[in-house]
Length: 346
Image 1 (tube, helix red, strand yellow):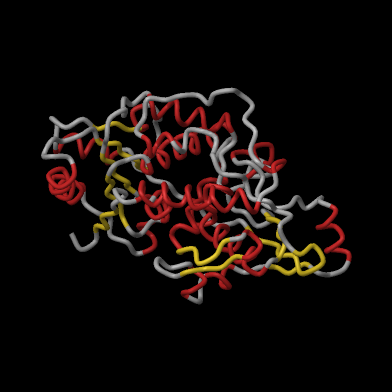
Image 2 (tube, rainbow, N blue to C red; image 1 turned 135 degrees about the vertical axis):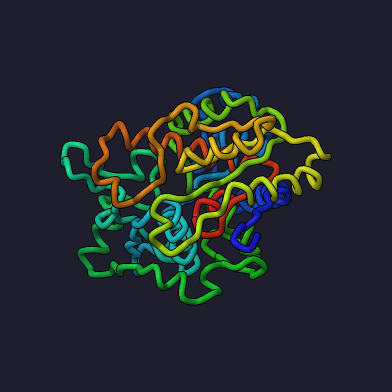
């Protein structure tokens, strides 16, 4: 069990409820009415999913971040979005928090984003964020940004600024004051969860497509999840966790959290061979996975993305977003510490 990182999401529902309640109280004081989210439909689409999954399948109840809540006459941060998706989003989240803490305006640059590059230029993405997410940060065409560029007030933000010092990673238990957002003595985990909810917003059609797929797995009752990552992690010196270790951990957690009754298990995997391995080990258990509906996933390798078509790119991330929501919605999930996916979903 030394290599297996067991990540409990049992307590996260309480954190989410507290964070949402805390934010709603503050938002009434800090956000003007025009900034409050207006839904395009009277009622959001409903899915038969547990509450923690369902919260990611509806438009957020929290206001989107106000990207003009900053000193427009001061320094502007050019925040890079690069590396793999969850690692890139993790660094982006920390740099956004740091910018608000400094009361500095920011915009996001994808000019060195490996996720965009394709050998066939006709299949290259012009933006990754814009293809799947609502806009993050000020537009580079915004009048504030243009003026900052003209006046040489733009600084390239580096990921080391939010990673080399532990307090900038927003470690659990630390308290933070972000005056520009009227956050005072907010604990790190709650801060990141609230900021994530306000910033990381899938486009409605992407979110709805992912949630429809997740619902098709029949996960309306509490379920467990496995997160499996192989692919290019083998070249980074990691020893992959054996499927037997997942099963061993699951058997223990079934007793602790599911009253001894094995629930459905949602498997999020970049290597779909793992699903066959789990089913062979426990043929009487019910494993649900996008691997049953999406062929050709034999381990994610970032360097191979440059050969993908747009259709392959969209299919990969459709599956990926289903899996992220599926992991976040589980009562308990078992993952590995050597991937940012596990930490992101938690």
